[in-house]
Length: 97
Image 1: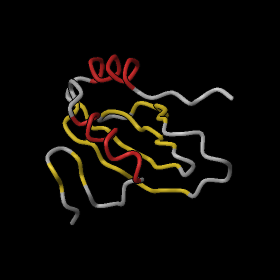
Image 2: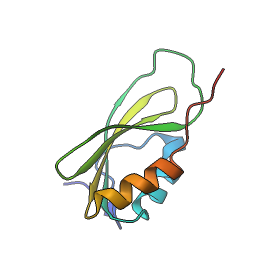
Image 3: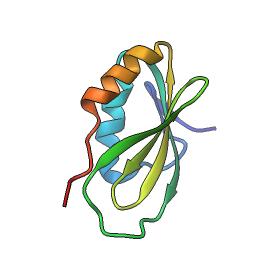
Image 4: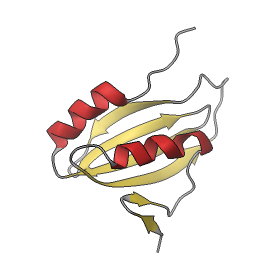
């Protein structure tokens, strides 16, 4: 069984640059748990840290955390609308090159 530090579950590794962002997500309105998932090795150059919402799930959202490699992140939410509004304002966007 994985270890949980407050709302952030620590069963899987977390991409080094993304830990702070996941801790901030745990404080977002309506978020009850942040669950890091699989990491896939990057195929191209790193474009900095950014995060995208992939889709909504029954319990919240699936996100992709990009740092060159890509990590799945699942948010469990008690208020998905409030969480979605927070994500729209606070998620880092990819740099335009």
